[in-house]
Length: 117
Image (cartoon, rainbow, N blue to C red; front, side, top):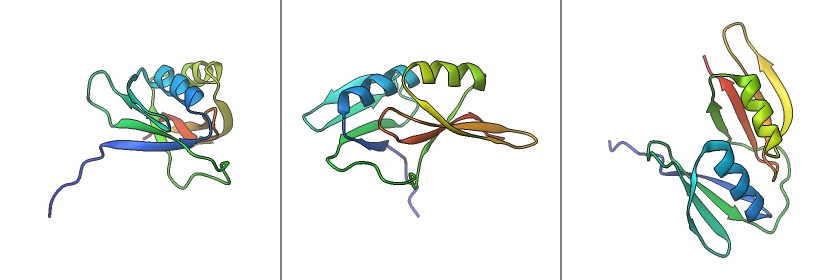
């Protein structure tokens, strides 16, 4: 069987500019390509999947069925930095050996930040 590769992760939102600003600053990605209704962000080192940001007309409803996990060396520092960029904290998960904070980007897309055991 062929091995598949994740090329990009797509996030929807109503406002493209705030998503571009947030995710480039949050991940250190660069804007690779932009059109009327979408943008592609790229890891400058080429090691991580692209982020595909898509403008959609409908509002977000409910919890995301899939989300991004961002592993960081210092969770508290990362959460402070990301909330300063416009994310909001939704809740925190703690386990004996690891934990993470669930946040939402400016368009409401959930993502987790922490250490994933």
